[in-house]
Length: 353
View (tube, rainbow, N blue to C red):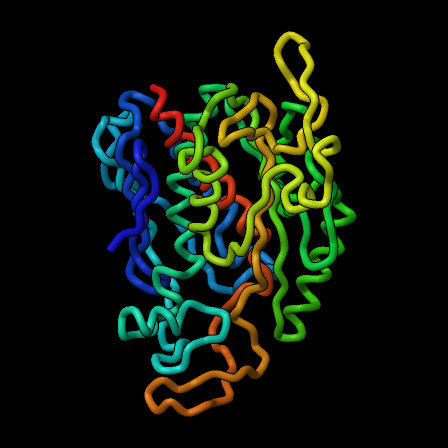
């Protein structure tokens, strides 16, 4: 069974964390556009596991194999594009089939399907790998339209990075950095925070900020057709996302209208003096950079004793997670956030073409 997103560009993700493979099918991509497979692989490599002490020790090459949808010259051929990544380092034996892990989807999945999915199954963060394949393709297509994306770690625990400038169209590809932050000093403190949590058998969460530039005014629509709603739906497809805000976000609730309103002015085109709205008004882009932040919970797989229930006996039990897990997923989640946002934008643009 696959899980799909989009109306015009339909993205369907399939597979499980510890199955033979995971993958994605894309329908509706424009025929004749060239896809740079090396760039696509490089983008997906940004979220790959097992690269440093801040990530899970599970090592996967995450090599993309495109099965259909491209010509010999790497042009989209108008047919559905299907790509897979083979799981080569699975250990399903690390996971209990009767005791749900606190903080995971194990228990509701058991109620829904009758089994606990190994390693989270389709609910695992592992499924962001095929999301990045789809989003990486979307990025290349949108780049040719002058639309750019960037993202960084806004915070981990109580440590914050410098935010993006909400007014400038400039992007610096911060997301390509090994540890994607604007302020390297803050980045070092974040790394120390992650290592401390790991050494204590614990984990830590954080926030990712994403910026989209080059969107013409009017993309999106009213009510359920909004740009912000489309982005939010896609971003919530990333496991562990617990919240999203645009522009001033929840802080806007503390302001008066005279403080929150973004004054318009004309300088070659209509602009705003501030960007509290995050580049979106009434569900539509207003021509300013779109800016949003996604909150990630701490990795629920920790190595401290926890309480759970053995579902085979309905007995309360003490429980300690086994396996290989990230003490923090935020730094690896930067590419998936960009991928989700790119898919949302590409899908909405498909309505206007």
